[in-house]
Image (tube, rainbow, N blue to C red; front, top):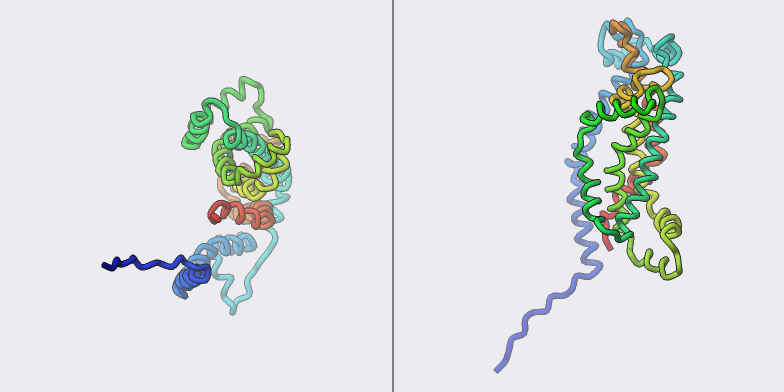
Length: 306
């Protein structure tokens, strides 16, 4: 009596896996998909190009016709830097004096939440204490609290503390609003770090401080850069928090408050908004381009296993 043995399935080889990956890559690189991506990119860029062209057009041309008339090759367009000159140095609505205010508001509002979030994320990830999971869920749940609900209570408290008219209300508010998301993201990134690294450091006699700075910090650079870019762009472009807690005072008002007031009390200077918008975009674009490689690494961290 003979017994039949089930067929043996060969284990997938490395070459076979690479072949399937190559086929999948070819499918995703479909010419129609590439064409659709190019079309979407062009449509996404057109409004920005129109805003840029408008910022160099005289007021008379802006009110007379659209920015696309500059593209008529049979007519010589009239371009000028007067809008930028008036926006930067033009009287009461000058933007040149508010770059410093915006930097003073933005930099601490980025450094403070990242510093606190790193310490909290390390505690949640690598220190076992009672009620850790419940506290982490509570911190995570704070992300659903709308910012608008907290404005009046915080403003009342800041006035009682005598902080009105200073940068402290804006710093504290941005830090509080950013901490839940920062702790959550950095905690998840820390949990992806192999525990063997931390255990090896503990065997060598390293404490929490040395483990944090010597072992984890070099690995956390992409995650820190990713959140720093998000927070920097959020604070730099913020109007609601700055207008509520800074009150539009000239000594603490950032660029966004002045750009909102640039049109004048009767809206007669609205043509300056395009120039003001591009002036305020200079620093965020530089920051994003300089940290782009860390941003991509941070976004892709944990997406590839093995």
